[in-house]
Every structure is written in C-alpha cells, then in structure tokens.
Length: 236
Image (spheres, rainbow, N blue to C red):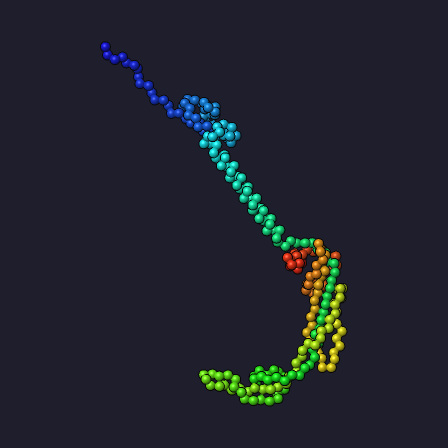
C-alpha cells in the first residue's frame, strides 16, 4: 500500500511580540502580556514601569543610575553653595551709619629767611643768587680731553619751614589760624583737612573733600564699606 497523505504541511507560527514593560515574549494574537498583563500597543508610563518592572531586570538599572546621578548633582550644588558662602563672608560688607559730627583742621607753614653760601656750575646757579666769585675748572672729560667750565660761588636766601600754625574745631565753621610773622619770616604752604564722624556698629572717622563735607548734615543716614584694617573704603 502507498503512504497515507497526512494532509497539508503545518504553516510556520506567526511572529511573536515582546512586551515593552517586562520583556516577556507573547504569541502574535495575544492582546495582553501573559506576565504583566500590559496591552500590546500601550506605551509604558513612569508609574507602570516602576510597578511592573521585576527587581533585578535590565530595565531597573537606569532608575538606580538616575538616582545616583541626582545625589551626585545635589552634593556638587551643596559644595558650591558652601564655597560661595565662605567667599562672601570674607568680603567687606556694607554697614548703615549716621553722621554724628564733624572735624576740621587748617595749617599754615611759616618760613624764616636764611642766607647760605653755595657753589655750582655757571648754568646751574639759582635765580636770585648773588655771585661772589668765578673760577675755571674741568667739568668733564671727552675722548681723553678735558672740557672746562666755570664754577661759581654765590650766596642765596633759602626759606626753610621753622614753625606751623594750626587751627582745629568740631563744628561746621572752619577758619585759618591767626598769622603773626616775626622779622624775616614769611607765610608758606597752606593745607586743610576735613573729617566726618560716623556712627554704626562702632564710631568711624573718615576724611572727605571740603565740598562734600560742607554738604553733609548731622543725623544724615548713609552706608559705608569697612576695610579689613578698620579703615573705610567708601561712603555712600
């Protein structure tokens, strides 16, 4: 007898699909995953991914690495904030102050005439000198040959500072000291200094230009930037 016909050959099975949530292979006709029951066409949400991803599966690794990255970032931010805080604490800060008073000082130098005798080359004699004598002398040597010039002896009046007259006060009415000259004296250089007294966490004294000093009033509120050595860097 001939071989019996067993019928048409079986068709190959249709392609399977892999669950995007848990990675399980499912038959082509299955509408839901046989492991986690997720729909074949659904995209995984963050909540479903955490709820349905089995511990130890490859999908859980990104979550752990993400947490590590967040912790590292937070640590870096904390370190930067700490460094910034230390840096700011070392910088001089602004302090509120009140104008508490004023000080001023004015000074005039008094010079006394003194006649001295000196000697110099003829082209270096100061103006007003009285010539006493001249003589020929070697001034320099050029190419092994002497170059001559004239030395001059003279006398001249000098005006050294012998005393300084001062006037000072703690009001807003600065004035110059009374000037009384002796025989042979003359008035020399004048100088003036103006100080404002400021009260903050402590008392400060700050020198300011005369124009600004005159504009300020007692009780006026402002701010200063104290320096490390106690001096004031700025007044606003």
